[in-house]
Image (cartoon, rainbow, N blue to C red):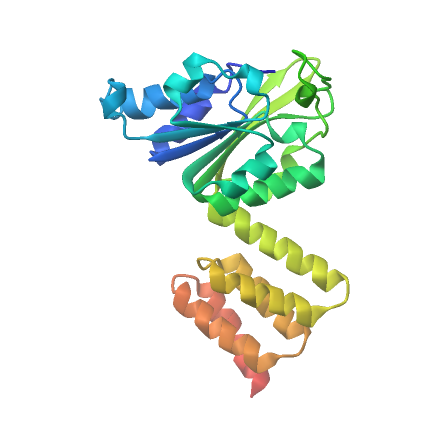
Length: 271
């Protein structure tokens, strides 16, 4: 529907206060409530800029159902893009935060994960996801809008590996509702490791190593991803390469004693 529960607004505002983004993309903006809140908090309250001409925060939105868009949304958002978010986002630039409020459940699971991947590619810092959890949130087309149908059901365990902060609300007789703050880098590294493990389980360790190596060259350093690559190298009996990677990892994460201990143990097996 063009609106959503008001219950997650406090959490949404808390995340914005913590992250202080200079740009935000609201995916599935609907009636524009969250865009207004972001504008009021970031520009007016925190930035002390109440005149539209003095606003500095770039707030854009995507909406698949054009009939929802009226003058009040156009007054708040800098740009509103009409169309399927999975396609529209390909033509957009980057944003410090991308907000997906009550969006993912309107995609089938495979497309929803593709949407998250694309949002991560267009985010420089964070994703915020608000989503109903559990199988009680059944919804068909509403407001003459076929896109209102819920096509997938979600559990927190699907987000937990890469969520930085989370808040939950309970709706008796229906289910839970979650709002999650996700570091863009944490999500990307989780997906890289997930794909590498999938390739490994197919029996192609060398391809998994190649995938991990190429992916890590493009991203900021992540300890879990580095150790995953080391583990793959060891499974392929590429001991010198594993030692070299661990030496690099120990330099990237000098505070991690476990990495140094792992490196010393591995070196002993070589000699």
